[in-house]
Length: 430
Image (cartoon, rainbow, N blue to C red; front, top):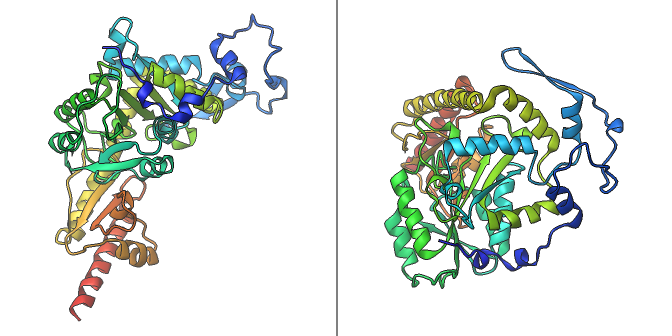
Protein backbone atom coordinates (compact mmCIF):
# COMPACT_ATOMS: atom_id res chain seq x y z
CA UNK A 1 0.00 0.00 0.00
CA UNK A 2 1.22 3.52 -0.83
CA UNK A 3 0.67 5.87 2.09
CA UNK A 4 -0.42 9.46 1.49
CA UNK A 5 1.14 11.49 4.31
CA UNK A 6 -0.12 14.93 3.29
CA UNK A 7 -3.09 14.79 5.69
CA UNK A 8 -0.74 14.41 8.66
CA UNK A 9 1.30 17.57 8.06
CA UNK A 10 0.19 20.74 9.80
CA UNK A 11 0.23 24.17 8.15
CA UNK A 12 3.63 25.05 9.63
CA UNK A 13 5.20 21.89 8.22
CA UNK A 14 3.68 22.49 4.79
CA UNK A 15 5.35 25.93 4.73
CA UNK A 16 8.82 24.62 5.55
CA UNK A 17 11.47 24.76 2.84
CA UNK A 18 15.03 23.46 2.96
CA UNK A 19 17.63 25.72 4.50
CA UNK A 20 19.86 26.38 1.45
CA UNK A 21 23.23 26.16 3.21
CA UNK A 22 22.29 23.17 5.37
CA UNK A 23 20.69 21.37 2.43
CA UNK A 24 23.86 21.81 0.36
CA UNK A 25 25.95 20.47 3.23
CA UNK A 26 23.55 17.58 3.92
CA UNK A 27 23.20 16.50 0.31
CA UNK A 28 26.91 16.17 -0.48
CA UNK A 29 29.23 13.40 0.60
CA UNK A 30 32.02 15.85 1.33
CA UNK A 31 35.52 14.38 1.59
CA UNK A 32 39.13 15.55 1.35
CA UNK A 33 38.86 15.97 -2.43
CA UNK A 34 36.61 19.05 -2.01
CA UNK A 35 37.97 22.60 -1.88
CA UNK A 36 35.82 24.01 0.93
CA UNK A 37 35.10 27.66 0.14
CA UNK A 38 31.34 27.55 0.61
CA UNK A 39 30.25 27.22 4.23
CA UNK A 40 31.30 29.25 7.25
CA UNK A 41 33.16 26.37 8.85
CA UNK A 42 35.79 27.33 11.46
CA UNK A 43 39.36 26.35 10.77
CA UNK A 44 40.37 23.30 12.87
CA UNK A 45 43.74 24.91 13.56
CA UNK A 46 41.87 27.18 15.96
CA UNK A 47 40.08 24.39 17.83
CA UNK A 48 41.28 24.38 21.47
CA UNK A 49 41.44 20.56 21.70
CA UNK A 50 43.79 18.29 19.78
CA UNK A 51 43.09 14.89 21.33
CA UNK A 52 41.09 13.26 24.11
CA UNK A 53 41.56 10.14 26.18
CA UNK A 54 38.62 8.29 27.70
CA UNK A 55 38.85 5.89 30.62
CA UNK A 56 36.31 3.05 30.66
CA UNK A 57 34.99 1.60 33.95
CA UNK A 58 37.44 -1.34 33.82
CA UNK A 59 40.35 1.08 33.33
CA UNK A 60 40.80 0.63 29.57
CA UNK A 61 41.92 3.78 27.75
CA UNK A 62 40.28 4.91 24.51
CA UNK A 63 41.92 7.73 22.60
CA UNK A 64 40.05 10.08 20.31
CA UNK A 65 42.69 11.22 17.87
CA UNK A 66 43.03 14.49 16.04
CA UNK A 67 41.07 13.36 12.96
CA UNK A 68 38.04 12.15 14.93
CA UNK A 69 38.21 15.15 17.23
CA UNK A 70 38.27 17.57 14.29
CA UNK A 71 35.14 15.84 12.97
CA UNK A 72 33.52 16.08 16.40
CA UNK A 73 34.31 19.77 16.82
CA UNK A 74 33.15 20.77 13.34
CA UNK A 75 29.71 21.30 11.79
CA UNK A 76 28.36 18.01 10.45
CA UNK A 77 25.32 16.68 8.61
CA UNK A 78 21.93 17.40 10.17
CA UNK A 79 21.20 13.68 10.03
CA UNK A 80 24.32 12.70 11.96
CA UNK A 81 27.78 11.28 11.37
CA UNK A 82 27.69 8.72 8.56
CA UNK A 83 29.53 6.13 10.66
CA UNK A 84 27.04 6.49 13.51
CA UNK A 85 24.07 6.26 11.15
CA UNK A 86 25.56 3.06 9.73
CA UNK A 87 25.91 1.64 13.26
CA UNK A 88 22.36 2.60 14.23
CA UNK A 89 21.01 1.14 10.99
CA UNK A 90 22.68 -2.19 11.79
CA UNK A 91 21.27 -2.05 15.32
CA UNK A 92 17.73 -1.31 14.11
CA UNK A 93 17.99 -4.07 11.50
CA UNK A 94 19.11 -6.56 14.15
CA UNK A 95 16.43 -5.65 16.70
CA UNK A 96 13.42 -4.62 14.62
CA UNK A 97 14.02 -5.41 10.93
CA UNK A 98 11.41 -2.87 9.72
CA UNK A 99 9.17 -4.56 7.12
CA UNK A 100 9.28 -1.41 4.96
CA UNK A 101 12.98 -2.11 4.33
CA UNK A 102 12.01 -5.39 2.69
CA UNK A 103 9.27 -3.99 0.44
CA UNK A 104 10.62 -2.87 -2.93
CA UNK A 105 9.79 0.76 -3.74
CA UNK A 106 7.93 1.33 -0.45
CA UNK A 107 7.06 5.04 -0.24
CA UNK A 108 7.02 4.86 3.55
CA UNK A 109 10.36 3.07 3.94
CA UNK A 110 11.92 4.09 7.24
CA UNK A 111 14.92 6.41 7.47
CA UNK A 112 17.14 7.08 10.46
CA UNK A 113 18.27 10.43 11.81
CA UNK A 114 19.90 11.40 15.07
CA UNK A 115 18.19 13.62 17.63
CA UNK A 116 19.27 15.47 20.76
CA UNK A 117 17.67 12.70 22.82
CA UNK A 118 14.20 11.16 22.61
CA UNK A 119 12.59 14.33 23.98
CA UNK A 120 13.96 16.34 21.05
CA UNK A 121 12.71 13.64 18.69
CA UNK A 122 9.27 13.80 20.29
CA UNK A 123 9.10 17.59 20.06
CA UNK A 124 10.07 17.64 16.38
CA UNK A 125 7.60 14.85 15.63
CA UNK A 126 4.67 16.61 17.30
CA UNK A 127 5.72 19.93 15.77
CA UNK A 128 5.35 18.56 12.25
CA UNK A 129 2.00 16.86 12.96
CA UNK A 130 -0.18 18.82 15.35
CA UNK A 131 -2.33 21.94 15.06
CA UNK A 132 -5.64 23.31 16.39
CA UNK A 133 -8.34 20.66 16.64
CA UNK A 134 -6.13 17.61 16.18
CA UNK A 135 -6.36 14.62 18.51
CA UNK A 136 -3.48 12.59 19.87
CA UNK A 137 -4.41 9.39 21.70
CA UNK A 138 -2.62 8.15 24.80
CA UNK A 139 -2.92 6.19 28.03
CA UNK A 140 -4.85 7.35 31.10
CA UNK A 141 -1.57 8.38 32.73
CA UNK A 142 1.12 9.45 30.31
CA UNK A 143 4.47 11.21 29.90
CA UNK A 144 3.89 14.86 30.94
CA UNK A 145 6.21 16.32 28.30
CA UNK A 146 4.05 14.82 25.56
CA UNK A 147 1.05 16.64 27.01
CA UNK A 148 3.06 19.81 27.51
CA UNK A 149 4.29 19.73 23.92
CA UNK A 150 0.90 18.94 22.36
CA UNK A 151 -1.19 21.60 24.07
CA UNK A 152 0.51 24.74 22.66
CA UNK A 153 -0.15 23.39 19.16
CA UNK A 154 -3.87 23.35 19.99
CA UNK A 155 -4.16 19.55 20.00
CA UNK A 156 -6.36 17.59 22.38
CA UNK A 157 -4.80 14.64 24.20
CA UNK A 158 -7.55 12.02 24.53
CA UNK A 159 -6.88 9.16 26.89
CA UNK A 160 -8.10 5.60 26.51
CA UNK A 161 -8.77 2.95 29.17
CA UNK A 162 -5.52 1.26 30.11
CA UNK A 163 -4.59 -1.94 31.92
CA UNK A 164 -1.27 -3.58 32.81
CA UNK A 165 -0.62 -4.34 29.13
CA UNK A 166 -1.31 -0.81 27.89
CA UNK A 167 -4.22 0.68 25.96
CA UNK A 168 -7.18 -1.69 25.79
CA UNK A 169 -7.90 -2.20 22.06
CA UNK A 170 -11.65 -2.59 22.58
CA UNK A 171 -11.80 0.77 24.33
CA UNK A 172 -9.68 2.36 21.60
CA UNK A 173 -11.96 0.95 18.92
CA UNK A 174 -15.04 2.18 20.78
CA UNK A 175 -13.61 5.70 20.78
CA UNK A 176 -12.61 5.56 17.12
CA UNK A 177 -15.92 4.06 15.96
CA UNK A 178 -17.76 7.28 16.76
CA UNK A 179 -16.42 8.40 13.37
CA UNK A 180 -16.71 6.57 10.04
CA UNK A 181 -13.56 4.89 8.82
CA UNK A 182 -11.85 7.51 6.64
CA UNK A 183 -11.17 7.31 2.93
CA UNK A 184 -7.54 6.62 1.94
CA UNK A 185 -5.38 9.69 2.50
CA UNK A 186 -7.91 11.30 4.85
CA UNK A 187 -8.10 11.66 8.62
CA UNK A 188 -11.07 10.62 10.71
CA UNK A 189 -13.73 13.30 11.14
CA UNK A 190 -12.29 13.68 14.63
CA UNK A 191 -8.86 14.56 13.22
CA UNK A 192 -7.04 11.76 15.03
CA UNK A 193 -3.41 12.24 13.99
CA UNK A 194 -1.48 9.82 16.18
CA UNK A 195 -1.38 7.35 19.03
CA UNK A 196 1.45 7.89 21.54
CA UNK A 197 2.89 5.37 23.98
CA UNK A 198 5.99 4.39 25.93
CA UNK A 199 5.60 0.64 25.29
CA UNK A 200 8.30 -0.69 27.64
CA UNK A 201 8.83 0.38 31.24
CA UNK A 202 6.27 3.09 30.66
CA UNK A 203 6.84 6.46 32.30
CA UNK A 204 5.08 6.58 34.74
CA UNK A 205 3.22 3.28 35.06
CA UNK A 206 5.87 0.69 34.16
CA UNK A 207 3.45 -0.88 31.64
CA UNK A 208 4.88 -3.29 29.06
CA UNK A 209 2.78 -3.80 25.95
CA UNK A 210 2.39 -7.36 24.71
CA UNK A 211 2.92 -8.07 21.03
CA UNK A 212 -0.73 -9.16 20.77
CA UNK A 213 -1.79 -5.77 22.11
CA UNK A 214 0.50 -4.02 19.61
CA UNK A 215 -0.93 -5.99 16.69
CA UNK A 216 -4.48 -5.03 17.67
CA UNK A 217 -3.59 -1.35 17.98
CA UNK A 218 -1.65 -1.38 14.71
CA UNK A 219 -4.65 -2.89 12.93
CA UNK A 220 -6.83 -0.03 14.21
CA UNK A 221 -4.20 2.49 13.08
CA UNK A 222 -4.48 1.09 9.55
CA UNK A 223 -8.28 1.08 9.60
CA UNK A 224 -8.63 4.62 11.00
CA UNK A 225 -5.49 6.09 9.37
CA UNK A 226 -3.45 7.43 12.26
CA UNK A 227 0.25 7.26 13.07
CA UNK A 228 1.89 5.47 16.00
CA UNK A 229 4.58 7.29 17.98
CA UNK A 230 6.61 4.59 19.73
CA UNK A 231 8.66 6.44 22.35
CA UNK A 232 10.78 3.53 23.59
CA UNK A 233 13.35 5.14 25.89
CA UNK A 234 13.37 2.17 28.30
CA UNK A 235 13.51 -0.59 25.69
CA UNK A 236 16.88 -1.99 26.79
CA UNK A 237 15.94 -1.93 30.48
CA UNK A 238 13.26 -4.60 30.02
CA UNK A 239 13.40 -8.21 31.11
CA UNK A 240 14.54 -10.52 28.33
CA UNK A 241 13.42 -11.60 25.83
CA UNK A 242 12.68 -8.14 24.46
CA UNK A 243 9.17 -7.69 23.10
CA UNK A 244 8.57 -7.23 19.40
CA UNK A 245 8.23 -3.52 18.63
CA UNK A 246 5.53 -1.58 16.78
CA UNK A 247 8.24 -0.80 14.21
CA UNK A 248 8.77 -4.50 13.55
CA UNK A 249 5.05 -4.82 12.69
CA UNK A 250 4.85 -1.75 10.44
CA UNK A 251 4.11 -2.84 6.88
CA UNK A 252 2.57 0.47 5.79
CA UNK A 253 5.02 3.05 7.12
CA UNK A 254 2.93 4.60 9.90
CA UNK A 255 5.23 4.05 12.93
CA UNK A 256 7.59 6.74 14.19
CA UNK A 257 10.04 5.13 16.60
CA UNK A 258 12.05 7.26 19.05
CA UNK A 259 15.14 5.81 20.75
CA UNK A 260 17.78 7.30 23.01
CA UNK A 261 21.28 6.63 24.28
CA UNK A 262 20.39 8.47 27.51
CA UNK A 263 19.36 5.38 29.46
CA UNK A 264 22.05 3.00 28.18
CA UNK A 265 25.03 5.36 27.87
CA UNK A 266 24.49 8.79 29.48
CA UNK A 267 21.92 11.59 29.16
CA UNK A 268 24.71 14.16 28.94
CA UNK A 269 25.50 12.95 25.44
CA UNK A 270 22.13 14.44 24.40
CA UNK A 271 21.91 11.79 21.70
CA UNK A 272 19.02 9.74 20.42
CA UNK A 273 17.71 8.63 17.07
CA UNK A 274 14.42 8.51 15.24
CA UNK A 275 13.33 5.84 12.75
CA UNK A 276 10.73 7.52 10.56
CA UNK A 277 8.89 6.87 7.27
CA UNK A 278 10.74 8.80 4.55
CA UNK A 279 8.17 11.58 3.88
CA UNK A 280 8.00 12.35 7.61
CA UNK A 281 11.77 12.05 7.95
CA UNK A 282 12.27 14.71 5.30
CA UNK A 283 10.03 17.16 7.16
CA UNK A 284 11.62 16.22 10.50
CA UNK A 285 15.05 17.16 9.20
CA UNK A 286 13.78 20.44 7.74
CA UNK A 287 12.87 21.41 11.29
CA UNK A 288 16.28 20.30 12.56
CA UNK A 289 18.07 22.29 9.85
CA UNK A 290 16.79 25.58 11.29
CA UNK A 291 16.81 24.68 15.00
CA UNK A 292 19.39 22.31 16.47
CA UNK A 293 21.16 21.77 13.10
CA UNK A 294 21.47 18.18 14.25
CA UNK A 295 22.82 16.62 17.43
CA UNK A 296 26.21 17.36 18.97
CA UNK A 297 29.02 16.29 16.65
CA UNK A 298 31.41 15.99 19.59
CA UNK A 299 29.02 13.70 21.46
CA UNK A 300 28.64 11.60 18.33
CA UNK A 301 32.42 11.29 17.94
CA UNK A 302 32.93 10.31 21.57
CA UNK A 303 30.08 7.80 21.43
CA UNK A 304 31.36 6.42 18.12
CA UNK A 305 34.79 5.82 19.65
CA UNK A 306 33.10 3.43 22.09
CA UNK A 307 30.70 1.87 19.60
CA UNK A 308 33.50 1.31 17.06
CA UNK A 309 35.38 -0.59 19.74
CA UNK A 310 32.36 -2.63 20.85
CA UNK A 311 30.46 -3.22 17.63
CA UNK A 312 26.74 -4.01 17.74
CA UNK A 313 27.31 -7.17 19.77
CA UNK A 314 29.41 -5.31 22.33
CA UNK A 315 26.83 -2.56 22.65
CA UNK A 316 24.08 -5.13 23.21
CA UNK A 317 26.25 -6.82 25.86
CA UNK A 318 26.63 -3.44 27.55
CA UNK A 319 22.84 -2.99 27.45
CA UNK A 320 22.41 -6.37 29.14
CA UNK A 321 24.63 -5.17 31.99
CA UNK A 322 22.63 -1.96 32.28
CA UNK A 323 19.41 -3.98 32.36
CA UNK A 324 20.76 -6.24 35.11
CA UNK A 325 21.78 -3.22 37.20
CA UNK A 326 18.32 -1.66 37.05
CA UNK A 327 16.65 -5.03 37.63
CA UNK A 328 18.52 -5.25 40.94
CA UNK A 329 17.44 -1.70 41.82
CA UNK A 330 13.85 -2.61 40.96
CA UNK A 331 13.90 -5.69 43.17
CA UNK A 332 15.22 -3.65 46.09
CA UNK A 333 12.55 -1.03 45.56
CA UNK A 334 9.75 -3.60 45.57
CA UNK A 335 11.17 -5.37 48.62
CA UNK A 336 11.17 -2.11 50.56
CA UNK A 337 7.71 -1.17 49.30
CA UNK A 338 6.41 -4.48 50.66
CA UNK A 339 8.23 -3.93 53.94
CA UNK A 340 6.87 -0.45 54.59
CA UNK A 341 3.71 -0.07 52.48
CA UNK A 342 2.20 -3.54 52.19
CA UNK A 343 -1.03 -2.40 53.87
CA UNK A 344 -0.96 1.13 52.48
CA UNK A 345 -0.42 0.75 48.74
CA UNK A 346 -0.83 -1.60 45.80
CA UNK A 347 1.07 -1.89 42.55
CA UNK A 348 1.89 -4.09 39.57
CA UNK A 349 5.47 -5.36 39.47
CA UNK A 350 7.20 -3.56 36.58
CA UNK A 351 9.17 -5.71 34.15
CA UNK A 352 11.67 -2.96 33.45
CA UNK A 353 12.11 0.78 33.29
CA UNK A 354 13.00 2.98 36.27
CA UNK A 355 9.69 3.45 38.07
CA UNK A 356 7.33 1.86 40.57
CA UNK A 357 3.75 3.12 40.14
CA UNK A 358 1.94 3.00 43.48
CA UNK A 359 -1.71 3.48 44.34
CA UNK A 360 -2.30 4.53 47.95
CA UNK A 361 -5.26 2.59 49.28
CA UNK A 362 -6.51 5.17 51.78
CA UNK A 363 -5.80 8.41 49.95
CA UNK A 364 -7.98 10.02 47.31
CA UNK A 365 -5.23 12.47 46.43
CA UNK A 366 -1.51 11.86 46.94
CA UNK A 367 -0.49 15.48 46.23
CA UNK A 368 -0.75 16.83 49.83
CA UNK A 369 1.36 13.92 51.08
CA UNK A 370 3.97 14.30 48.34
CA UNK A 371 4.10 18.06 47.78
CA UNK A 372 3.85 19.09 51.43
CA UNK A 373 4.76 16.40 53.95
CA UNK A 374 7.38 14.46 51.97
CA UNK A 375 8.90 17.57 50.42
CA UNK A 376 9.28 19.09 53.89
CA UNK A 377 11.28 16.00 54.80
CA UNK A 378 13.41 16.35 51.66
CA UNK A 379 12.00 13.26 49.97
CA UNK A 380 11.20 13.61 46.29
CA UNK A 381 8.68 11.39 44.54
CA UNK A 382 6.07 12.47 41.97
CA UNK A 383 2.31 12.71 42.46
CA UNK A 384 0.14 10.76 40.02
CA UNK A 385 -1.76 13.92 39.09
CA UNK A 386 1.35 15.17 37.25
CA UNK A 387 0.79 12.47 34.63
CA UNK A 388 -2.84 13.31 33.92
CA UNK A 389 -3.98 15.54 31.07
CA UNK A 390 -6.32 17.35 33.46
CA UNK A 391 -4.77 20.09 35.57
CA UNK A 392 -5.45 19.84 39.29
CA UNK A 393 -7.06 16.40 39.11
CA UNK A 394 -6.99 14.34 42.31
CA UNK A 395 -5.11 11.07 42.08
CA UNK A 396 -4.18 8.39 44.64
CA UNK A 397 -1.13 7.37 42.58
CA UNK A 398 2.57 8.15 42.92
CA UNK A 399 5.65 7.46 40.82
CA UNK A 400 8.76 6.32 42.67
CA UNK A 401 12.06 6.20 40.77
CA UNK A 402 14.47 3.46 41.82
CA UNK A 403 17.25 4.33 39.37
CA UNK A 404 19.46 6.64 41.44
CA UNK A 405 18.90 6.25 45.19
CA UNK A 406 21.11 3.77 47.07
CA UNK A 407 19.64 0.87 49.05
CA UNK A 408 20.05 2.87 52.26
CA UNK A 409 18.45 5.98 50.74
CA UNK A 410 15.51 3.97 49.39
CA UNK A 411 14.94 2.38 52.79
CA UNK A 412 14.99 5.82 54.39
CA UNK A 413 12.55 7.11 51.77
CA UNK A 414 10.01 4.33 52.22
CA UNK A 415 10.25 4.67 56.01
CA UNK A 416 9.45 8.39 55.69
CA UNK A 417 6.44 7.64 53.47
CA UNK A 418 5.12 5.12 56.02
CA UNK A 419 5.63 7.57 58.88
CA UNK A 420 3.80 10.40 57.14
CA UNK A 421 0.94 8.12 56.12
CA UNK A 422 0.54 7.05 59.76
CA UNK A 423 0.41 10.70 60.80
CA UNK A 424 -2.31 11.39 58.21
CA UNK A 425 -4.39 8.45 59.41
CA UNK A 426 -3.90 9.38 63.07
CA UNK A 427 -4.97 12.96 62.38
CA UNK A 428 -8.17 11.72 60.76
CA UNK A 429 -9.09 9.63 63.79
CA UNK A 430 -8.41 12.37 66.37
